[in-house]
Length: 148
Image (cartoon, rainbow, N blue to C red; front, side):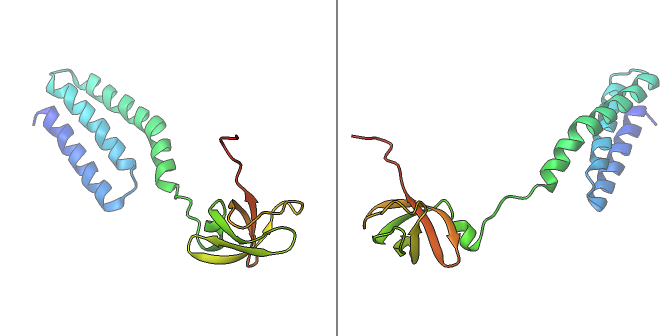
């Protein structure tokens, strides 16, 4: 049997084993076997083929595996419930200050207090939700990016 065919067989067996185990490690070794198969197809000796397999496998395991593991183990930060309201834009429906007023966040009406108790926010002002305390939104007026 020609050596390139043997390396392709090894790569295929490792690839199938990867599909069955889903560890990602066997896929890296299959890629190393493909590198050795490429050298074998060029007619290079067995020693160079084994060296290519070893170097490629070591490079894949030390360089690619940590990055792939990090991506596989990371989960998107999903905020749900009241945590999803923090940072949202709201419109003041009744004046908000030290005493609670009302704001509309999305399609819902919430009781709200000013994040800074010394600031009185008039009706119609666009505010940002800084925090939620119980059923009360703590809001602060948006800064005007284009002052007059």
